[in-house]
Amino acid sequence: MASPFIIGVAVAATAYAGRYGIQAWQAFKARPPAARLRRFYEGGFQPVMTRREAALILGVRESTAADKIKEAHRRVMVANHPDAGGSHYLASKVNEAKDVLLGKKGSGSAF
Image (cartoon, rainbow, N blue to C red; front, side):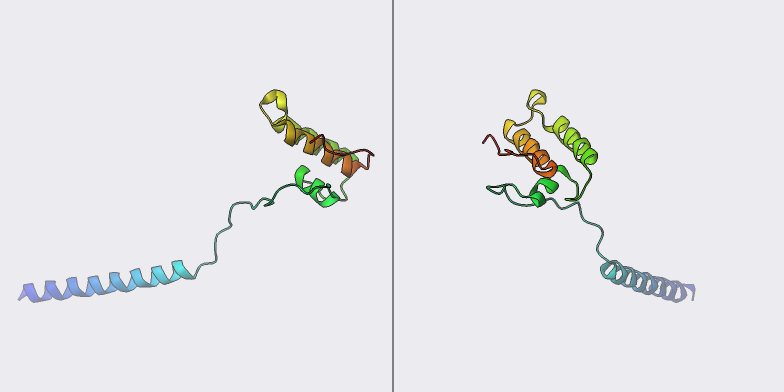
């Protein structure tokens, strides 16, 4: 007599567990997408550097103050300096970006 009762309770528990699992899966699928990793600028350098490209290289806005541009230039140069294993090409592009944003003349790349 107890055997059919135990089997019934086991079937009911399995049904409830299955129902809960399906609801949890549907809630998991319906959640908003998680924040992705930061997207970086895709593509190479333009032949003539623009203010937009210079701002992207230094990680500032085009209308940033001169002291913030110099601070950003220093931060990027520390990470990419040729003496610390960085690339000469990237260092020249970082310097060119600073010159473009600060409005200095003759700010062409050495490469």
